[in-house]
Length: 354
Ligand SMILES: *[C@@H]1O[C@H](CO)[C@@H](O)[C@H](O)[C@H]1NC(C)=O
Ligand SMILES: *[C@@H]1O[C@H](CO)[C@@H](O)[C@H](O)[C@H]1NC(C)=O
Image: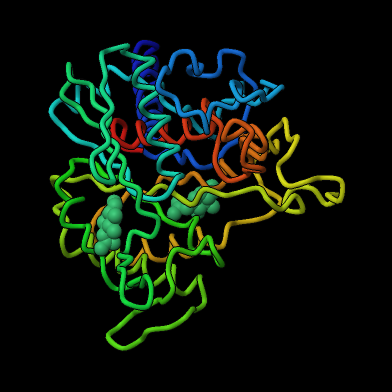
């Protein structure tokens, strides 16, 4: 074989290999596996870049003394997280409406997305509250990003003897499905009891009314109701469906530190868990959620944020949420912070199919 043929073959082999690797890193990359790395170019925005940021999330303003937690970037093991482009996001969603529906962790992600978009384009915005909705709009792009607070997704209905949590019913769905993109989430409220529990009875089936039941079982029933509703009633050619994975809290330091007697929940945590594994293992609610999602026939994209968030024991407001007035918050996330990465995953799913 002549030298030029050999070179041509070598070039051909190289280009085939290169395409294969390229295809894997674009479409086939698992963004949920990775670790947090220190990156001085972070955060993606500051609270000054986001004039509408809620006090609850603005940990720096609330006096959090350390700022290293702002400088970690999620590094997937086998590829890069794509760069977030607010102008690309808004251009391609011109005339469209995006809905976040779920508990206050949805609010956390919704707020993060509006900050990231505003930092990118600095366009005129408006914020309106109508009924239970918060509507953030960029008129120049005709895009709205809407938040609907709905802790359980399934219905809570006031009745004579108290509120009933209806595990079989999801009447708000007929409104939700008019949106172009929906990011669902529910978990956080399922374990609440006592005066943090906003219902008196829980009902499923026709005559199964209970004072209480196993909460993981209730969670799974509600998710199955939601899944059946998506499969039967959502036109996923028109509406893209996402599920925000379970957001972990860090109230139990034993999960990440064997010698945790000296720690009070997430208080004083200044660094992520380094490496790719969380010592506390997988989250029980994540296991339930993934089991339900596997039964579905319609395409639903899981934003698999649980592990990457588990590693961020340093990312919560602790005593620097609610402007320091409401005790320890090891559930929500400071902004800028971890939900910005959730939105990078959302961006990747919308624009790169990964
Ligand atoms: C979500 O991510 C975790 C951690 O990488 C992984 O173990 C799990 O299988 C992922 N779940 C799905 C449904 O991809
Ligand atoms: C529908 O959602 C709104 C808030 O988003 C809530 O106030 C209302 O109770 C929900 N409807 C039912 C039947 O749960």
